[in-house]
Amino acid sequence: MRSLINILDLSIEEIDALIATANDIIANPERYREACKYKKLATLFFEPSTRTRLSFEAAMLELGGSVLGFSEANSSSAAKGESVADTAKTVSCYADIIAMRHPKEGAPLIAAQNATIPVINAGDGSHNHPTQTLADLLTIRREKGRLCDLNIGFCGDLKFGRTVHSLIAAMSRYEGIQVTLISPEELKLPSYVKKDILRKKDIPYTQTTSLEHAMPSLDILYMTRVQRERFFNEEDYLRLKDSYILDPAKLRGAKSDLCIMHPLPRVNEISVAIDDDPRACYFKQVLNGKFIRMALILMLLEEAKR
Image (tube, rainbow, N blue to C red; front, top):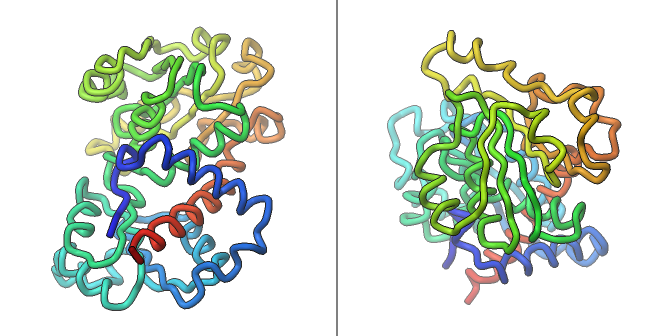
């Protein structure tokens, strides 16, 4: 039995296979309408979510399966003090696969170690978000036609942004990748990510506080919000929350085929005036997230049979 906790749990070949399956689902949805008939997905969301939770639920329903679970910790036995391990063991009695989001780093790993069914990490604190990364990779492949020879700019909250950390880890395995890190000093990419991934794999990277300066060289711009829920100090959040706002003026120096991405939700870091720009891909990311999660559910359930 296999789970997905970290994007690096998947080989490049497995990611390619998931992308191929997702593309086939997009092209031939009728083939998959009963692929998970009589199977149940448990969504254990100890932290608020719209896109990820509904994406998992839509994915399972479109595969012909059903969904059970909860959308906040207060509506589960966690409110009574139940451990993640016991929750995982209990839910294993009711469902065939689990998608878990938790504010504490490592909680989905503990669940996977105690469950008797596959567990998918749907986000753990500021640590990992592998299915968002799969959605990002599918989007990049569909928009750019490749996952190599790209300059990717990450802008905003690079310190707490689990989607940033996961995508950097995933892209580090492809040839010809360059990374541009755009953030205020207080929200720079953690040194361990630079050391363990970028430097270890000799990936060229630059750090800057200027989005305009970085823009002309970028093939992909990955915007992020400054996350209020990760701050201990409201004053620090208010000071940094509007550090970068992407508007049409800032795109003047951008490539005509730039791919603008954002894991969402956005607050005001991308102006709504950008939404109609053909380079805006963030709502495509949302849809791609459903298709790649369908592919992942199929893969993990198939492997659980063996």
